[in-house]
Length: 121
Image (cartoon, rainbow, N blue to C red; front, side, top):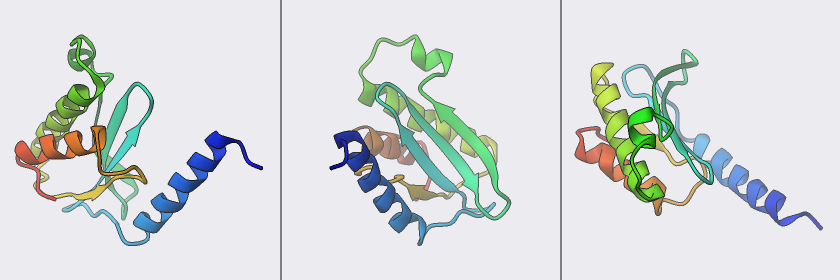
């Protein structure tokens, strides 16, 4: 039998591949992908056709790292930051890739904060 961690990771990978079959980012409408670790959260805007990252943000940015908040609040701040960086890069619309995670908790608060700041998806 597999260890619990590998079973969980295998399940998330299966979900991730199933999602990625349908999603693809372009220069005008990049893919917004989220990675969630135990302590941090990272987000990137990716142009899959060119294979480039157009913008990124994480909870390891000094301004967010200094604030003493819980992980959901940090995810909300990261969502606001990626929306600002997307607008600086001239990006209005994105395709949201939850990367196999449930649309719940930190992933949901990041997405809602990005929407509130004007990012469309």
